[in-house]
Length: 101
Image (cartoon, rainbow, N blue to C red; front, top):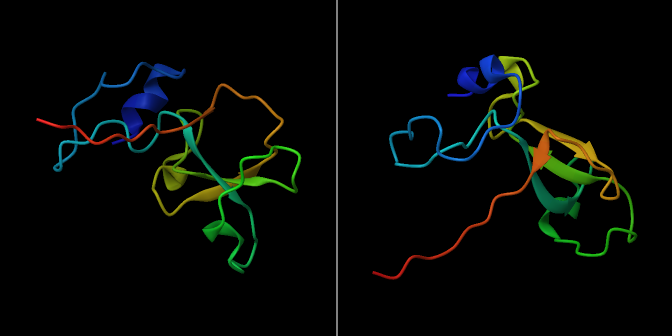
């Protein structure tokens, strides 16, 4: 998954491509996923703390790659940093919710 996004040349609406083996859509390759955790080059624990104030420090962690990136970046282990005050059409976030049946 992810190469479909590269061929689109842009961010696409969620659910445009088949789900993975667990029924999840769009995990890699559409947009970098904004985590809200502080970026720490050496994983010193900052990523365990969520930060809601955009002016409270340095860059935040992004994960997963976007349609613009080479396949090497299209995986959940891929991480990068981004200034929380910046804007980019290759950065988004994931909204998770519990479904009650």
